[in-house]
Image (cartoon, rainbow, N blue to C red; front, side, top):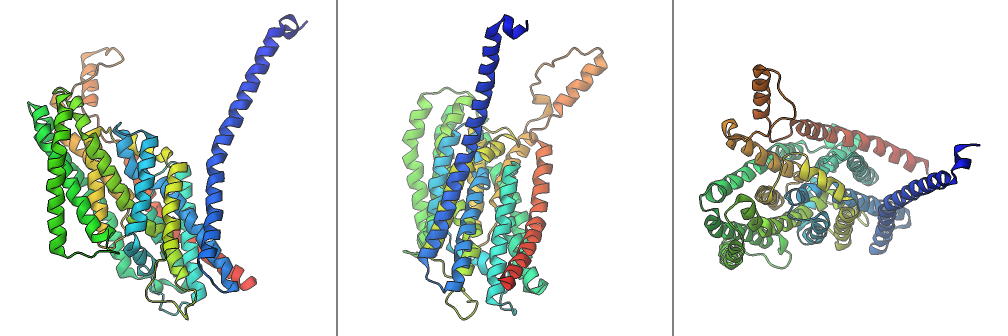
Length: 500
């Protein structure tokens, strides 16, 4: 007689375990398929919406639908990957939950894309290549479509591998690779490319410097004071005022330019007015919050929650304005060729094109964004509310400046550079002699072993160097990978066109 026959209950227990395991797998698969299904529905709607929004010749319908779908696909991937660099600090600083961060980002990303994305779209669509050098309309469309698709595929792979890459790198590399495949190296506008490439180096350095400077100010004026509570009552409202002034300046210069174009003097006056209004208006809020807490650093951190949330909202607005170009810039360039005798010198940005990019950013963020948000918030350096605030504000300021100049910089570089700036400042300020060492988990056999272990712990770095290497590798690989893929796709599209 077998064990099961002797004890039938064992058989039932094993059957229950197998059923529970199978049910768990089904539930996990269903949870993974739902976002993919919703994303597929959005892409189908993007294709239908594009076809309904523009009347083209019968032979151009397939190109219009394909461009609309791939533009939406690109927007989904940007929302899933790139927005994590903006929301990660707030989540890592334990100020926002992932759900709250995603909802805030979805709203402000969409608003920024719709209100202030036009200038950068024109830069990506026409500034990277010079299509007047003998390229046909058909090749130009295939060029832009292959650039868009290659960038989207690369970002999708990076998101699957949990790697925060630059979507700007991806689309610029795609446009460059497709341009070279279409008409050789002479088609690429190397002056514009050098300007963009320079911004890739400048933006993370500038972001790091700004973030470190703001954190140093907070440490000197608030956290290192004997009476931190009183210092916070004075300086936190000023920091809120600075954010209010910066946001007002940006909205005056970019966000509302379609309905109102103030002069420089007006913008400066409004910025100062907003600074003082936000400063004075936040004093009662900060005072009330300070009355409920003591003088410890961790208690003071809570006063930065509101400024951090404001900074996150500002950053998402700027990111939507800047990075919507990566999703719909090539789409806008393709649309500009319909109904024209050639490739027009200027690209008009239809509202429906901007809508596909804006909605795609929000949908991609809602469905796939939380994964990388946690990665960026936790893997580089430890963040709290003041540090995360510095990262968010520094990233926002840098992106706003770039958007104002019409320069498609990488928000990935800026955000990661700001996080590194905060981490390296912490390493510089925290002297090894003042570092508190936690007791080890093993007994040292000799005095020499104990001394060596102490030295190792003293040299503990506050920025994870291994993550630096992985980020640098992703940044280096992105441009050539997307360019190569775009060139291959261009030849495939040309072959299909000649065959059918």
